[in-house]
Length: 470
Image (cartoon, rainbow, N blue to C red; front, side):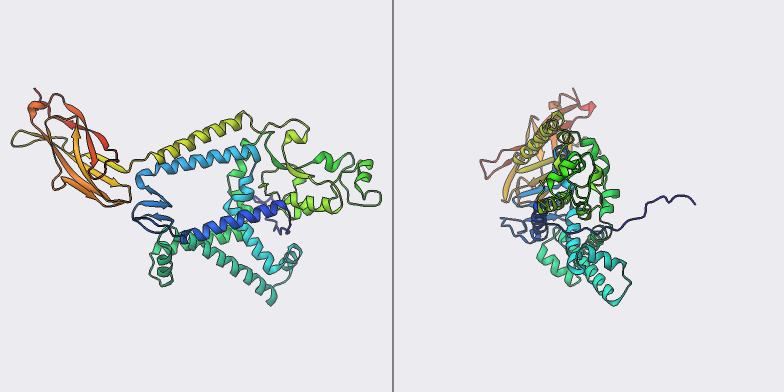
């Protein structure tokens, strides 16, 4: 019989633990959940536009992020944000390993909540193991049903909260409850609820071990100076290895004299691990650096009056007694590129023009000769008012002498806050003033009722038929 292709999953029942890193994870969990679930309900006073602090308005093609309004034309900012997040991930990983996975990853945060629900309903590790091995009785059905029901509630709230970012949250919620919301709202909520339930409730460590690519390429960003969750093998094993406390091996000095390591082989570090590994086996790609094993080991060490830190954040060089250089050339390179990229993005946001002028020349045909002999080019002009005020504009030409601009009924253009207008413009010129096959010029947009607003310009071309040239 051939070996199976896939290794069967071994169920993991993590044990609860208290300690400094568990408290840090709880704090981050509360902040992350509070931000995610409450942010759609935060109101924000704007002179125009919705009063929701964070709103992704697909219909209006703009994103509201507090006082910043991001238009479709600013989508390159998203690329900048993604580059910054990537560089930040590389930089932090080079310094401190997979701290993103252990503390901030959505999979970790939601799995933590699902485990809390599980412990609350079913009990701690031993009780859950006993329940899993017991036959299906009314009591087991009640406990498992309650667990899954609460998981489903958290999943639905997760999907619903995500959906509320894409519309006016109070009104959208009412519409959904009355069955009047768009189909996309229900589909998005159902999809997010299903994936949350499966990933955080059923798959759990399988996501980190097999689905997430970060687990596979993290070693590329590690070096011997990277701070990782590590077991001090020299101290924990010594010459005689690790042993449980026994006569003659009870206190710390007795173990040193006997050459026995500080590790008493209690297994607590393995029992609290959410991915089910033994940190004493060395660095493993499954480790998400959650540091719960540090809390577990320190708890045991403190209870028997041994020095803490047998498992700790450390580097390979530090464990070997060598000097550690956190800010090496690689990490400094990440930091430099990160600072430059962040600066460019901030500069782009701060220096964004209040108005946007886009010009597209109608090229079918490029130019025509009118019955009176004049040459005419046509242009499609879009003007976007990115401010929260109404402005009156005038469009003029610069660099095209003796040309006539015809904007139809739009001599003065009145544009409401956060609105866009499209104008079909025509430029006409007498052939005797044409000196080249094509001539560069600029459209200039000037705000008439505000002297502090800088004009906006856009370069274009005026084409002349060859037969019209002198």
